[in-house]
Amino acid sequence: IIILGCAIRRDGTPTHLLKGRIDRAVAFEREQFMKSGRHAYFVPSGGQGSDEVISEAESMKRYLIEQGIPDEQIIKEDKSVNTLQNFEFSKKVIGEHGGDIKKSIAFSTTNYHVFRGYTLAQRVSLRVHGLSAKTKPYFYPNAFVREFIGLLYERKGKHILFLVLVISYLLLYDLTLLIL
Figure 1: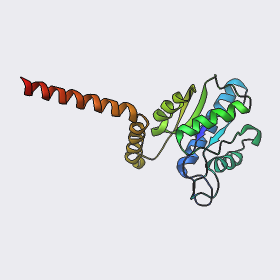
Figure 2 (figure 1 turned 120 degrees about the vertical axis):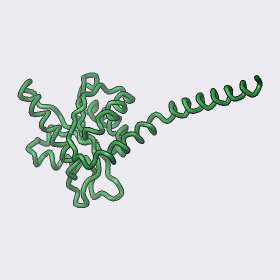
Figure 3 (figure 1 turned 45 degrees about the vertical axis):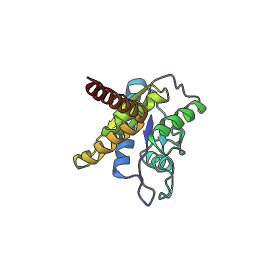
Figure 4 (figure 1 turned 30 degrees about the vertical axis):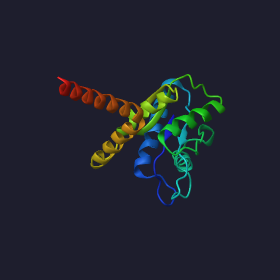
């Protein structure tokens, strides 16, 4: 279960938003254990920002251990600085630890971030199942604007091509009107 990182507190503990992602992953793992009798591995994923005392992955690992998850079930990925790298680098550490990356892998993030998570996981050829952690309603406007901008940026090449085609069409249309 890849847990996508986000900012941590100044003291290195997870923010409420990040705790929600971790708690959702833990709840899912416990549900799966009850069904299958097998424990999953957790991959807390996130590097250390310039304003952070430890990496997001280390912060998540400490919180997971506080929740009773054994160290042996945690594979840290602490180099990534964005969601695409979360998936790319997590895929690598899962493979290095003998995990089968061809199987479906779960990822835990906040509910507004799941769709973009799917699109980014596809870019690195990961089959994933998104786990959605709840967030406070007051955060939705900010979150959805951020995600919308993120999706636009992610596919900027396609958007630029589309704009060029539309502008070309309009210019050609105007040109034919002038000729006629």
